[in-house]
Image: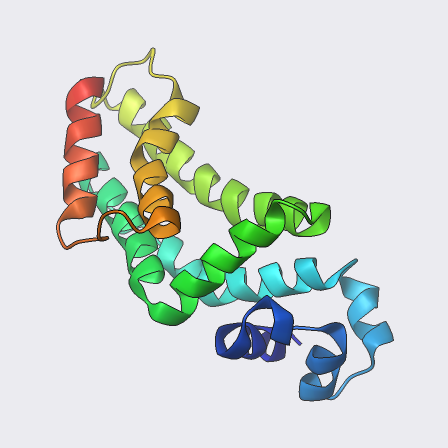
Length: 175
């Protein structure tokens, strides 16, 4: 079911990922899908999250700067990809008027990603790499906000080297 939903999302956006289309592609009934997910937004976001979860991987032994650069760079690569970048723009737009999509985006996309980065930042505090009084939610917004901003407004490119620049500038302020 998740593979079917992810394929539909990537091929045609949220409009293509209807419960009927997911059920038909997966070879199950709509009732089966509703047994596991309360709405199409939830199954769609779960499928997208499962497909993109490897982008949250952290290399063991990496410094804070290296780990954060991997996190920011992985998200940037998702946004540069025409299919996933377009899908994220669509989901953010739909979330403005659809509470189910807004809730699914928060619980299945943002919170898990932020949890990984918060753990990295806390470990960096423990190792003395950054100040202990850092406002971690603000730090995460400073790191990732520019990616969403550039994705949504398109005023600047998500250019090579952006991840390194963002991480270096934020960490310089946190030391």
